[in-house]
Image (cartoon, rainbow, N blue to C red; front, side):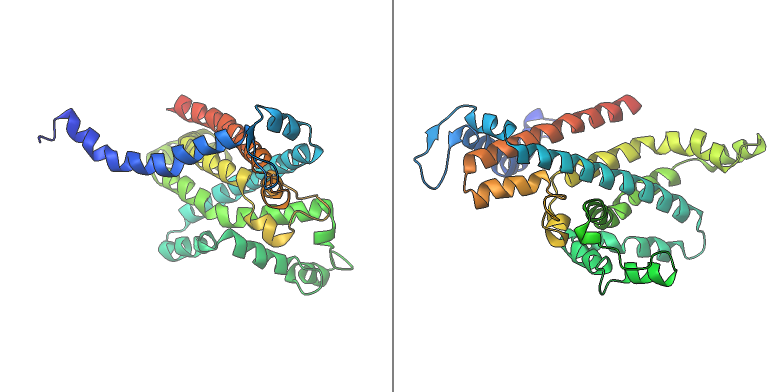
Length: 288
């Protein structure tokens, strides 16, 4: 069969299409069907329509989990953006041993999120952690910070532990965009009297905007549904101050053993992620 034949491309796409159907489309259809069923370990499986969704929207814990998820995902995305861009700018200025420093900056990316949670849980531990001890030696605080018993500090700790892993990912995207900017633009701006702030605002930022948006899209999507760091550090506490939407779904599936409401909550999370992901995609194509 000739390569120019249109059927050749269709045949080559069949294995990938089968994998997509098996791993994406079929589970999604199953999730949608289960979300409209009364599917528990006690009662027979029956069709209930949108009653599961009505229960979810009337549940206070759902709205609490959604609120905490927005705060958590927004904090992780913002910190990842700032840390990734700053790290990329610093690495782009290093000329000697640049390969070493760039490799060094990628190490945290290789750490699983659960392990990152355990590492930062030890760092922020008020009794044996180095964070409070370091601040006390600097005379900034007089006693250890109760990180995991304070609602604000516990959320900040989870955000830091999550962003620590994702910053190198954003750095790779940003650094690749910075390396593609012609040096002549900076030389011309310097001749015209532009300082480093002007060069970043009018040269660097417009050229890296496209790659940064892609990084923000991926970071916000993953952080919105993540549970690894919170599960390892706080388990949703203190109280429910770090109780994100993923924990709510797990409670529906495993504690209440209600697959119908758990699936309905998962569908809602999917639609929320798809909505702001669509906005990111719009901005990305707009930049092109």
